[in-house]
Image 1 (spheres, rainbow, N blue to C red):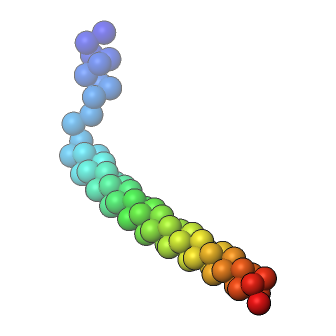
Image 2 (tube, one colour; image 1 turned 135 degrees about the vertical axis):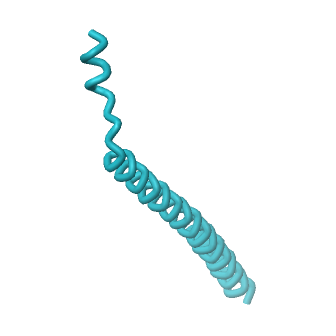
Length: 68
C-alpha cells in the first residue's frame, strides 16, 4: 500500500513548475475577470442613473406641458 501511495505522489520538478505556472496564470485571469466585473457594475450603475435622470426629465417635461 505504501508503495502505491508513494508512486502516486510525484516529485517531478517539471510538473511542479508547470502547475505553479498554470496557477499563476489562472490567478491573473481571475483578477482580470474580477476587475472587469467591477468595471461593468460601475458602468451599469451609471447607465441606470442616467436612465432615471432621463425619466425624471421626461416627467417634468410632461408636467410643464400640462400646466401650459
